[in-house]
Length: 146
Length: 146
DNA sequence: ATAATACCTAAACCTAACTTCAGGTCAAGA
DNA sequence: TCTTGACCTGAAGTTAGGTTTAGGTATTAT
Image 1 (spheres, protein in one colour):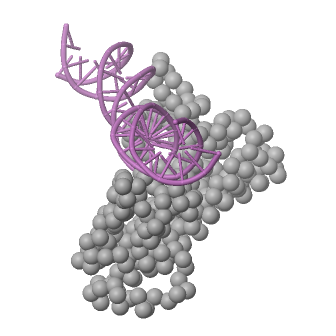
Image 2 (cartoon, protein in one colour):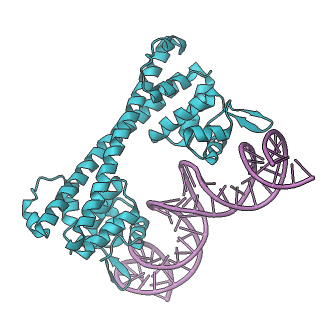
Image 3 (tube, chains in turn orange, blue, cyan, green):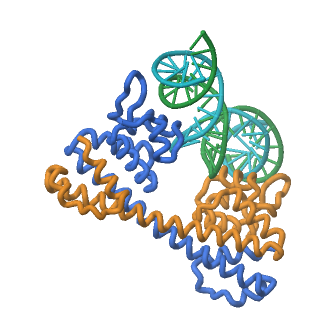
């Protein structure tokens, strides 16, 4: 059994955040001894889950939903699975999108390297092939003004 | 030359957002005719850049900085390059982190598939090898309570 | 005895990026 | 003429995910 201060220390997060999570219902089983929160292994594990799910971009609302389903028992396995399937699809989409953005950033880095070397952007215009993806061209074109 | 309404239509965004961007200084060269905003090709291009940079997770503040540097001319090439290098590193880190999270989500999907098939989680305990990354074990362990 | 800690609460505050609102200008159409 | 529609402004409201504040309790150290 840990006090809120100990848990905050363990996870390197402010006490206020733990109280906030509790208020949002993320520790539905937490005990109290004369008003004071007692974090058991259950809550420690829940906190690890919370960190994971937050990294997955899940909102507090949805994390609470998950915690509530866990509390309800095996009948909610399908819902829990569905939740993770949705989250997985979302994350895959995000990664795809981010890789596209990364390509653009790489192009921009290359572009400015050339521009610095040449002293101006004009010579570059001729070098940029027309088949660049539209968003990369956009970012290229826009660098023209002034 | 486009009106704010036309641009909003073109980009599928609310007029209020365009006014907000303008107020934040993202269109430093925009003309006005008797108080009314006139979006030229320059602003259209700027808007495409804004969309790209927002996807890269850049804040409005930083996008404004970039727009201002563009206005200042070639002397700011190094700063602009630096901005994109930083953003690129940040995005690469993000992608790495997200792939780890994705692994966890895949595990969770698999896990619940088994749990649903078996009807309970107990049989699974024996199947989970000890060498699982800590965060995956955490999410596994936590599914135990109740 | 008293003062420092560690805990508690409700409620106000914070930031980013918008959105909504209330009130005003101006040109074109019925 | 009058009213509709597109534009303008500053200011207030919104949402998420906390953080800070003000005031209170309970235990421990001096």
